[in-house]
Amino acid sequence: MSLKFGTAGVPLSAKEGSTEAGVRRVRELGLDAMEVEFVHGVRMREEKAFLVRKVAEETQVSLSCHAPYYINLNSNEEEKVIASKTRIVQTAQIAECLGAGSIVFHPAFYSENSSDAVLKKVVKELSDVREELDQKGNKVILRPETTGKPTQFGDLEETIQISKEILGVLPCIDFSHLHARSNGLYNSYDEFCSILDKAAEGLGQVWVENAHFHISGIEYGPKGEKKHLILQEADFKAEQLIKAIISFGISGTVICESPNLEGDTLTLQKIYQGLIV
Image (cartoon, rainbow, N blue to C red; front, side, top):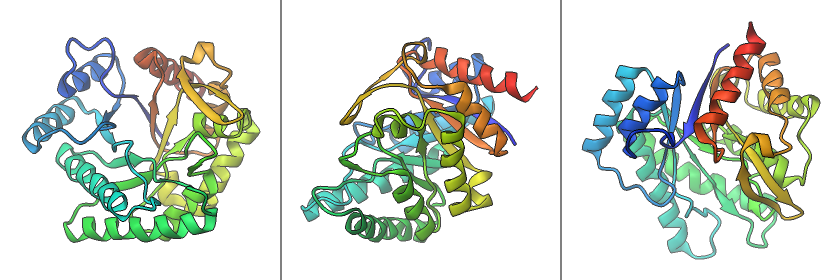
């Protein structure tokens, strides 16, 4: 097993804000991964993506991407569903140019519909996206993310079920979101193990060998996620989580979304390295 640790976006200490500078800084810091953030739109041209890819290959930094926030596959307005699918496809196309293995996205809102109804809708629409990408030979893994608010579709079971029903889809498990969504649960070794056990049982070895996680400190309340926090200021028990991941023999990528971006990413990596010795 092996875990790669990386930042959600360009490290704060990078000499400039470009993606390629971010990749180089990730390697200088001794980290192994970076998630390219397209949260406000896919605004990278293919020529730039291929340049970033070259830098990532030279520095041996693994890339993933986060699709725009403006995605809702359960919108009541058909044009918004179409636009959401287009954003996922656009992200996947640039991810392929980048050499990124996965794209992460928030799939939907409930909009007063039942979980079963939204799941059926999301599976239908995302199957269309996967089919379009497969026809283009694009094998980038689509990763619906567990979400941080009860109003957002994407609890653990829903996210696993999407992945069971569509080949080429695997979850991004955001442990901080699950902690916030439950207003403080999922924050002990046993609870983290229960999450990993459900994913491993539902998805098997293909997931165990290629997991993708988000971790940060988080502020929350009865309505779920409020904002990300640095680990030191939060109640999130990161060391217990890393212990659980190790105990399951999981390989993959851990992306840190903390405001103390590379500082907390290095902290998580240090915890991991200390536990596997």
